[in-house]
Image (cartoon, rainbow, N blue to C red; front, side):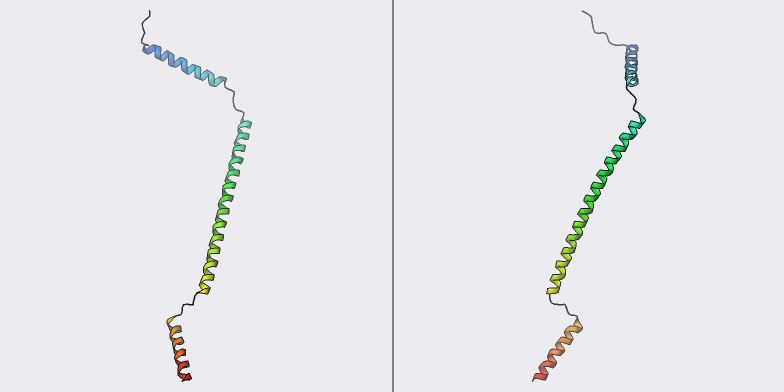
Length: 109
């Protein structure tokens, strides 16, 4: 029965060199990509990205318009509620109204 032989430094270097040459051979055997085909792929990818970008922008615009519509509706409701409330009078207006009531009471009696 053979005993296990520890690989020497030279054996490890030779194995690494063989592995390197095998990888290089595989790369050489691989077919090269045609420039026209690569350009077509890039064009398709860019078109897909542009379509996705336009879709996202349309969704954002729709959300923005919906938000603005909600704000406008809320502002209309607030304005209607404010119109139903009593008007807030200034100090001078309250004094003038009080004086008018006093004068009317004086003229009745």
